[in-house]
Image (cartoon, rainbow, N blue to C red; front, side, top):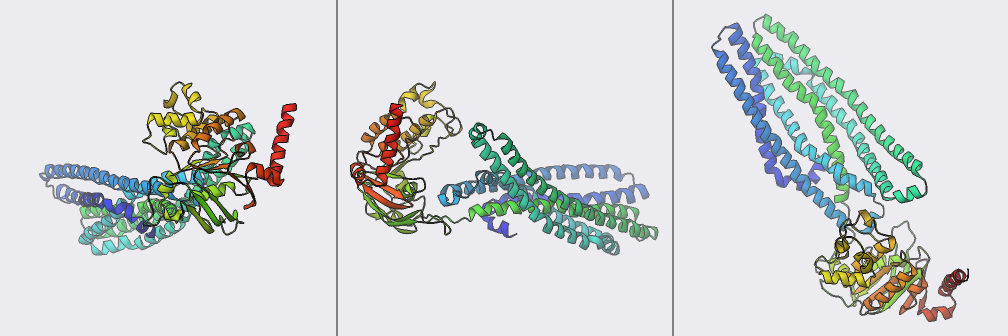
Length: 581
């Protein structure tokens, strides 16, 4: 029960529903045990002693029992569902909230499909046990105790004979739980993998089709689906192995009951009505014990689901705020790196090594270098997406760890290389970082990003509803809306991570002209592969293998004939070849 203890905070606040459900479960159990007593009276008093006047009273009693049991069952099931539904509502919210605050480092290795499986199938598996499994487990305990009490009242020897197989039955159920739980853990893991395959395939369907890899994807899915099938068959095999054994042991109890009970009736120690009542009571014990296999099955699924949920809930939130973190509406935007190094994991080489530079407010810093040279790593450290291994990063003369994350990120406009748009209106996407933005602010941001013109050509203009990930727009249009979104929050620091890579040269020129106005008074970092995007920067850092190989203005770096000059020659020679071809 360790898993359930760790998750107690999510279901215990709603214990009132559980205890109400439990109270009515007591009524159901008590009323159920009355059935055999009515059978005993019917046989012994009405049939054998011919007291027919009791028939109307017994009939009304049966009806009353059924009405009471029906009403109690309704309340029991309804409050049980309330207990489970309220609990997982809180649990699902907590899981989603935790995912929002986990650092980038966690998502570097996480699989989207697996996370979706945990928030859906695993949460629902846990809910089902809270709503139904706990109730069935307690029903089993109550039924066994009450029925055993009545059976001992009728005949102590017959009770011992009948229940002689129960220890063996309990042992079979215990072994079943030990075998089935690892199997269910494998099922949950393979189901998450299956979800990941589906999610990746749908997200990358354009790539799949463009490279004619449909058959490869079908094969990959078949393998994942086959793994899920094999794990499911393994679990079914365990169930098929243990269930007949449990049923056999239950039937042996019935044979012992009829044999010894018949002997007692023949010798007058037990009445026929008491034997029939005893027979009913035995099944009220045997079936819950046999069904305990189902409950154990459900418990194992729930436990496996709970373990997967705890992996997320107990994940360390690497980036934490200080209790007295600074909260400010507006930062000036001065950025300083002091001997900063970054190593993503212990097994990786350093992504950045001994980076030092200062960017005063209003200055433009260009970052250029080969893929993997550390350009994006620098900008992700400014936003505290990752924590530097060594060194310090200062904003306005204070270590960035002194600021609250909200203060820090509300003052940084980040346009990534791969723009992401939500399935909502264009207006909502632009104002995502500033929900209170007026329509005038939204339009102004769109104009500065050179997006207003094409937006106005759409049927619903700013109220146009976008498809998933901005489906329906070109790459350049999505990028311009992402740029407008960054501008809309009016940041002190603007980071453009190859932000114009998806637009043509003419649009890039227009955006850069617009940026010249937007950049005034803001510290701007531009990551680019095109030198044309960087030539007006106040300082350009040329990165190689995580180190600053060169630094200076465009003209200074051209004159030095270093790495920057070689990039310049390659790009402009290519352009000249195109112009003269």
